[in-house]
Amino acid sequence: MKYALVLERSSETCNATSTVLASLGYLITPVFSPKKALHAAHMIQFDVIVTWTSSIPGDRRSLTGELARCSPDAAVILLADPQSGIIDGNLDGVSAILYRPFKASDVEAIVEGRFDPPALQPPPLRSVEERRRRAVD
Image 1 (spheres, rainbow, N blue to C red):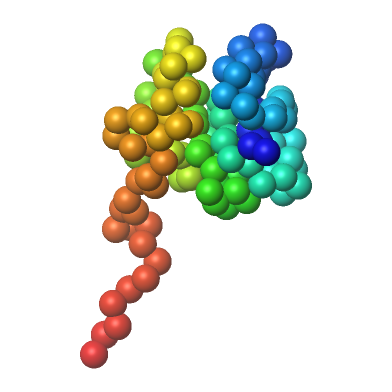
Image 2 (cartoon, helix red, strand yellow):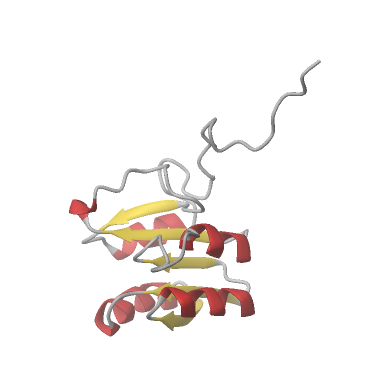
């Protein structure tokens, strides 16, 4: 069984996104707040996570980073508005960013790994994010 977590702002957009994922064979867990998304991610190992936000209000942690930590093999898809100014590759845990409006085939391509560039490859760490340091001789 394949599981998908959908965090959307409204039930309308949640239904649209859920319909696409359900047609691909996923069991959908819809949530409407970042804290409920984290709670669900602690309970279920998801294969796909779709979210409209990358942050948790009032919390320093990255929502997408925490969701990716809970389900390390999941494709984390951020659904962004074109005017949001989000640039690919600078968000923790995000596998791919889709800008609204998007097509069902775009979501399907990401989920099935046919996205160009490959959506399920994690972005490389920037040198300031790297925790390992060279040993000083």
